[in-house]
Each structure stands twice: as C-alpha cells, then as structure tokens.
Length: 120
Length: 114
Image (cartoon, rainbow over all chains, first blue to last red; front, side, top):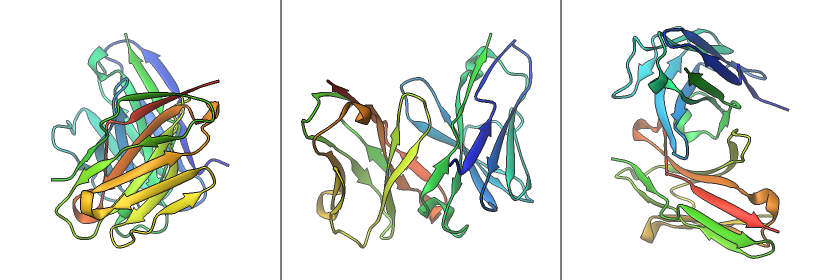
C-alpha cells in the first residue's frame, strides 16, 4: 500500500489564489520530507527540505515567501503556494526518506503521487 | 558540484528487446549513493535501486540489472526482455552535498511497443 499520501492530486484555480498541498507519511514518523517541482517533460528539481519543528531549508532560487512550508507534526508537511500565478503551474511532488532520518538524502525515498497544479 | 547526465532523451524498443539506459554522474565526494527511479504515466515515482559508492558489484533483480562502474562514473540500467508495462520515464539520481538531498538526471523516456 501507499507509504506517502499527497493531497490533492490535481488543482485548477484562478490566478491570485493560494493553494495548500499536503504530504502525509502513513506508516512512520518523518522528521524530514522533501518537496520537488517538475515541469512538463523535465526532471525533478528540489525546492526545499521540510524539517519537523523548525524552518524549512530552501534551495537557491526558490522564494520562501512564495512557497510556504510547514512541518508541524512528524507525519505531515504542507506546501502552500501563495498568490499563485500561471508560471507556478507545475507538478509538485513530496518525498519521505526511509531507513532513518540521518543523512536522509542517502535513503531510498518514497514519493507521493504528486499534485498537478494549474493556474488559470 | 554534483551532476547526473542521462544523455538518452527517449528510447523506443519493441517488446522483448533488451534496453540499456545510461547514467553518468559527477561528484567530488568519496562516499555517495546512486539511485534509479521509475515514473510511469500516472506520475508517481517508484524506487528501483540504491547503490553506494563502495559497492561496485552489479545487481540483478528479475529482468532488471544495474552496472556500476566507478572508473567511468557510470551507473547503467538494463531491462531484459522489455514489456509494454516498462514504458515510463526513468530517472537516475545522486545524493547531493552532505547527503541531504538527491540530484536527478533529466530522465530517459522509454517506450516499449507491442
């Protein structure tokens, strides 16, 4: 069964709307989760590392105020795209590293099913 | 800086053919991990394999096999007797600085025709 649940799977909304995407770890606690963005026919680009109980770590070029990340519990991280515009339309995917939270990038990651965001 | 190159943008094969997906990586780290993921048309990513830099043994899992060659910084993936269900985008990835994140290649689209 699914290890990571991501919701919603698809969002279509008007420009200026804020959209919240949830990523849940179903079977275990995760102090670290990752958020990726994937443009059509392109690779995954890491946006940020979500850290439970502390601020997220954003990759260079990712606007912190635009993409708000909250990791308030050991099983839930949320990504909020604030005041979304058409250029924010993309496929957003979260992942949870398995096998321990030390050096999470070394661990196989289980990915959510992704959220396809379309801003009109 | 870490970098993963998948030079093959798209490969088309006929069912039952063998196919090899290439992956070349760059890193200055002496300890690192390499991964392969599959992304079917539905979008979710499926973990296939992890290999650490100290283990150069090739691995076989059913129809899948992986060839890790440190000397050429390559981690190639072969599907034997391909099937239509193998059609997907395949990503090679390398763990980044500090081991805290993955760096993905551009992906290779594999189309298996019946």
